[in-house]
Length: 207
Image (cartoon, rainbow, N blue to C red; front, top):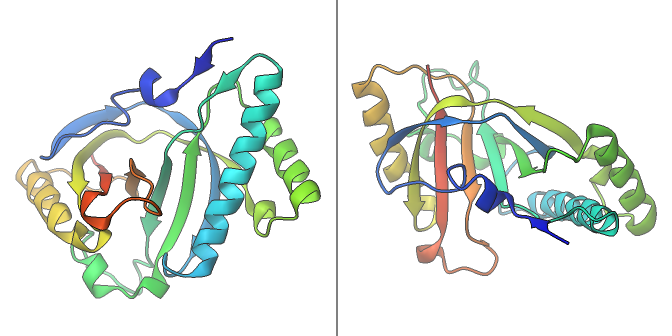
């Protein structure tokens, strides 16, 4: 039985250079859950738990049908209330906006053969079998970022503003405009990796 690994199938999606670059991102399908607040708080971890529980339920269900796949990397879209914090750039936002005000959508990319109805069925099954909180908030999510600027950030999340500032200079130099939400792809397991060794792709959709 072959096993699909999206990090290998879409290698360009899960790789970035340590300098800003313009890329074109393909449309993707995701398992998703939304939340708000400080990522160091328990609710954020509970949302991750719900997302992974559902992802692995789907994996084992499809493996039994002969369509095994590797559960892909965790990703996140991050935003804040523009009306409340108007004029704050993404490079300055981590320093100026309280963590309690951040909203997020956690994502795990799914193979094409996983449908929205499969996700809904898996969500119901996990909720009934394991009773994991927040599983009921799991949903299907489709996204087509297209033209984007990205860069590999190495180090703790607290140092992301430095990388974002470099990206903003590149975006401004090329007269690009904002065209979507700040996107992070977590190449490292931040529960097991030392902060200085964390690798994260930072991506900004542009026009």
